[in-house]
Image (cartoon, rainbow, N blue to C red; front, side, top):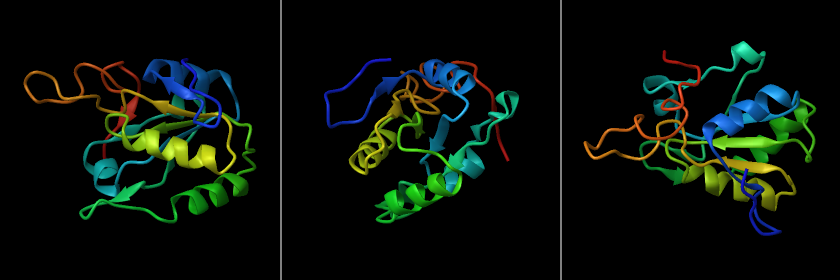
Length: 148
């Protein structure tokens, strides 16, 4: 896991590194910050094999894609409700790693000191054929996921 300068998020990780940490750290949490539409139509990571559930909190809302101004407040409240402390490893995931980076930085600014960005996201970047999911990210790593 790479680390960023002090005062920023904890660093970028690959999807595989995130899954390994989620598997080995009992309190660690995966937070998917994509939109409700993405969760429903594209799929979500499945952590049932390691006895965990993911948190689904939109960073932006479809279709306007306006930033969710209540993101940090809503997520902080949910983490507190679940007994998750500020020292717990939080892994943020979006489609390709851009929104999740913003979310990780936002929560680091709220005092959570182990906010990691899953840099490849769920689907990764576009490949040469303008398709996602083949080059990087959760799906490309062969990690478990489900689709509704």
